[in-house]
Each structure stands twice: as C-alpha cells, then as structure tokens.
Length: 136
Image (tube, rainbow, N blue to C red; front, side, top):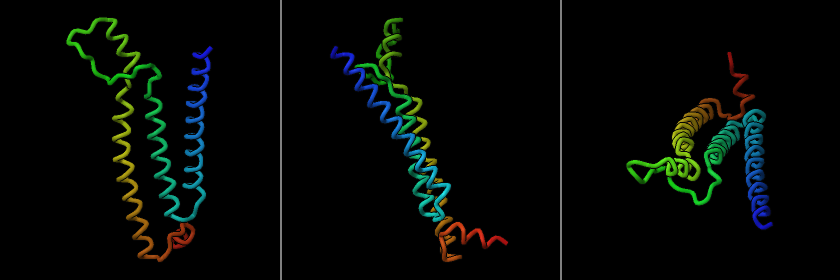
C-alpha cells in the first residue's frame, strides 16, 4: 500500500512539473508574440530558453533508484553490469545539449540586447510598433 502511494505522489509531482513547464512556455511565447516592448520580448525569450533547458533536463532524468553517474567502473563489464548501468545511470546527452543551449541562448540574448540599445539610441523608442513605422 505504501509503495503505491509513493508511486502516485511521484507521478503526480512529475506531471505537475511538466504541466508547469508547459504553462511557462505558453506564457513566454505569449510575451514574445503579443508584447510590443522589446525589453519584454527579450525577457520572455530568456524565460523560454531557460524553461526549454529545464524541460530537456527532465526528459533525460531516470526514475531508477539509486541514480549513478554514466560511468562503467570495470574494464570488461558483464551483461548484468550493462543492464544495471542502463537502468540506473543518467543520460548525459541532454546535459551536454543544455550546456550548449545555455551558451547559444546567452549569445542570442546579448545580440538582441545590443540591437535594442542601438534602436533606443537611434530612434528613442523600444516599442515595436513605433519602429515598424520607420520602415521606408
């Protein structure tokens, strides 16, 4: 009975986390699409990137206990060692992709901030509607 309650709680919490991440992604997309201020768009884009990174980390997470690092400790592993390794180790690929995505997100954010500073310096506005009228 206790095991089924623990399983229900863990399933409920993971479902709650996934739904919260999806809600945050939806709010960030709303901020990017419908907010006219460039700074609000930059903040929403940053939130979207960070939420996508967290979502990717959760996708690579294993539910097995105890969790082990993705390292085989023997030079000649047996089939039992390999099956235990696959069941209990965390997948390192999403972690590597997230590190790369963080660096790319930082570079894109800095580029957009530079463009926003230049737009304000030249046109004295950060409103996308005002900047769209300057097309010529």
